Amino acid sequence: MAGAEGEDSLYPIAVLIDELRNEDVQLRLNSIKKLSTIALALGVERTRTELLPFLTDTIYDEDEVLLALAEQLGNFTMLVGGPEYVHCLLPPLESLATVEETVVRDKAVESLRKISQEHSPVDLEVHFEPLVKRLASGDWFTSRTSACGLFSVCYPRVSSTVKAEIRQHFRTLCSDDTPMFAKVLELDYVKSDIIPLFTALASDEQDSVRLLAVEACVSIATLLPQEDLETLVMPTLRQAAEDKSWRVRYMVADKFSELQKAVGPEITKNDLVPAFQNLLKDCEAEVRAAAANKVKEFCENLPEDSRENIIMTHVLPCVKELVSDTNQHVKSALASVIMGLSTILGKDNTVEHLLPLFLAQLKDECPEVRLNIISNLDCVNEVIGIRQLSQSLLPAIVELAEDAKWRVRLAIIEYMPLLAGQLGVEFFDEKLNSLCMAWLVDHVYAIREAATCNLMKLVEKFGAEWAQNTIVPKVLGMANDPNYLHRMTTLFCINALSEACGQEITTKHMLPVVLKMSNDQVANVRFNVAKSLQKIGPVIDSNALQTEVKPVLEKLATDQDMDVKYFAQEAISGM
Image (cartoon, rainbow, N blue to C red):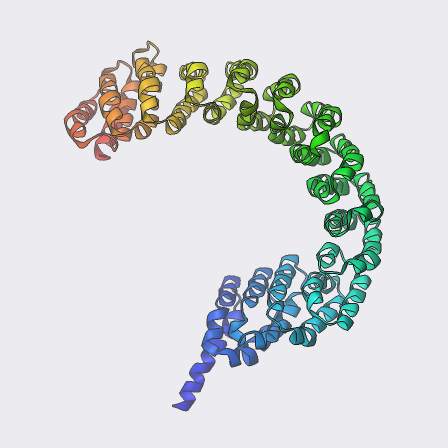
């Protein structure tokens, strides 16, 4: 009996070993994801003495299996007996922190950082800090890279002697994770140890190292007093903003708002404004796009007393050039933020300087640029008012809506629900409603189809009552149009609108028109009547369905045209 119990207790670990050796990756992955269950079955002591050694010795597998293992071990503290035994998790995680795949290493470091908080100060020095030293002095760059992420979690909680050793390891590595470590370092050591390393890294021959120094600029600048920034950080930042590698300049542009906040208003005025101008005029489109994306944030963060002057004198001339940039990504990035300048510059400057730029972008050949402008019209509306907006930008929208090229018309239709939401129902009815109805009789089918979808989205936005008073009468009026294509559009609109309008409007107003069209002379219209009745059937009340719809469908099922008969029979069987 005792022997049987012993065999039972070995079962979980035996199954795990068996599954981890299976050729099927998915089975191995599932097994790793069940580790916590297996650990519970084994108990804390056998987890420490059997499971963890097994995992440490057998770490060679597909990356996704190792990634899952690294994640699981970060949550294992209680399964090994609590904080007192948390150091038992270090060996497998140390092995995972040295593998070649970056995502696995990063996850292992994340788990190590997590369990480091559960070590007592004594355990940290006895178990965790030696692990960091081993990684930092490893032969392979993979282990040294992982050590970079661990300096900062153990440094604040160890003795002065051990702190000195960690700083020495850090100096030796000159890792690219300077900012993470600097945040926990005493200010004197930041100046004496970190700044020289940081300056050396910022001049490294590899641009992948130099661009990380830009990120470090932000962290270091937030740690130093204002008076030290000019001498210790700004030379590096100026150098990065003019770096020969576009990737480094891109990083400066991408981090510009954070740099601006870190260095303060005076340095921003004297140094960052010219640097930002140069980035907006950069020869590389990627850099210009990154800088253009920061225009609004940069302007918002300028000191209030000189904000308008700096924008009008230094930023706006560059922005005007970017509006007609040759690269669509640059124009799109600018279009996504440029409308926000109106709230910063006020009504007069918006009308005089910004509206012409908005107008140019609204007519841009790139659809994303046009969409970004239309998406942000509410910013301008708040500043200059709906009347001014209608006089300046809406004529351009109407012009595009009537463009000879059908693809341009199609693009504007797709933006119309968004525009309607920005401008409100009253203004929409006054200026744009007639446009939406005109699209329903366009000579291009794709436009008529898009216009139908557009009506459905407008009804969803403005409600069934608005539809009953404004849209439905006009749509139903098209049922008498001499052109059979327009009569069919009526049916397509009813199909699209019935659900949004609800049972009452559909039964009382739309259904009679559909039933009347069952007598149309054109077979295409009649079989679309059958399709429409099937489509709106679930919305109509059951009484009308039995007394009005079914008789018409039965009549159509005996039609001379084969297609009409087929679709009528389909509708009957579908009800």
